[in-house]
Image 1 (cartoon, rainbow, N blue to C red):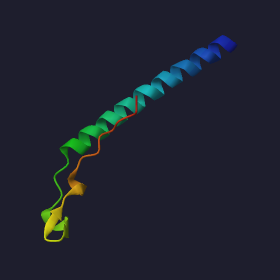
Image 2 (image 1 turned 180 degrees about the vertical axis):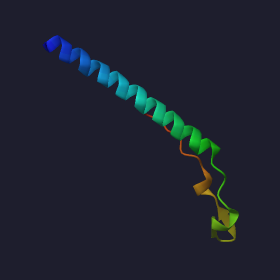
Image 3 (image 1 turned 135 degrees about the vertical axis):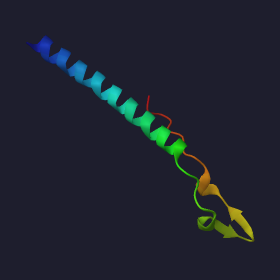
Amino acid sequence: MVTMKLEICIELVKLTVDFVAALAESIEVAFRNRPPPPIQHLAVRNGRRSNHTAIPIPLVGFL
């Protein structure tokens, strides 16, 4: 009985890891395919545009 519960728990952990990996991959694809931000929303300092908001954020550390 304990062995069966442990096997079920291991299978649930495997499914959870697969789900999180698929979710992270789909979020990464969504970030890659998003349109660039409009120019008028970029901050302007000392006559120069600061486009630090246009840098994509990589999803690192999930696996």
